[in-house]
Image (cartoon, rainbow, N blue to C red; front, side):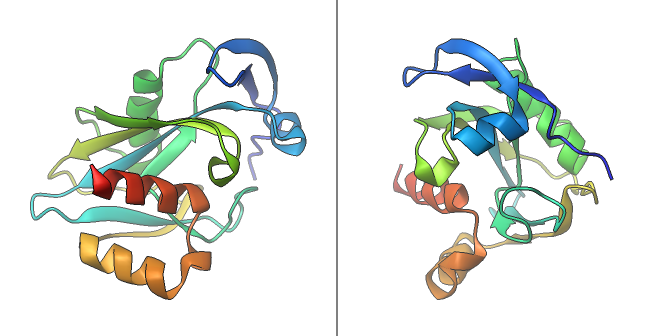
Length: 167
C-alpha cells in the first residue's frame, strides 16, 4: 500500500504564510499548521456527494467526509489543489468555485482550509485507495446524519458544512 507519510508539505503560520516544510507525518504528529482544500460536489438536483474515507487513511479512517479533500503541495495554489484532488479522488474535470476559507484549528487538524464548490452532471468515479464508498444525498439528509451520529463524520466536514449552509 502506498504511504503518504513522507510527502513534503508546507508549514504555515497563523496568517497562512509559509514558514518551512516538513513531512506529512511530522506535521501531523507535531500539530503544525499546514494547508488543505475540501470540495463539495453537487449534482443537478442539488444533492451533495459525500464519501466514506478509506480504512487505510491515517486520519479519520472510515469516517464520512467532503466529496474530495487533500493537502496543498508546495508551490501549489489552493485552486490548483482543488482541481487536482477532484480529478484524483473522483475522476471529475470541472470548474471549481471558491466558497470560503477557515483558519487552522483543532477541527481541521491544524489545516488552513479553502472550501470549493463544484456543480457537475459527471458521475464520480471514486479512487478506491482513498474512498471506500460515496454517494449523493440531499442537504437535509446530511444534517440528519450529522445530528444522529456526529462521531461518524470527519470534524472538518461538520465545521465546513455548517459554515457553508449559513452563507
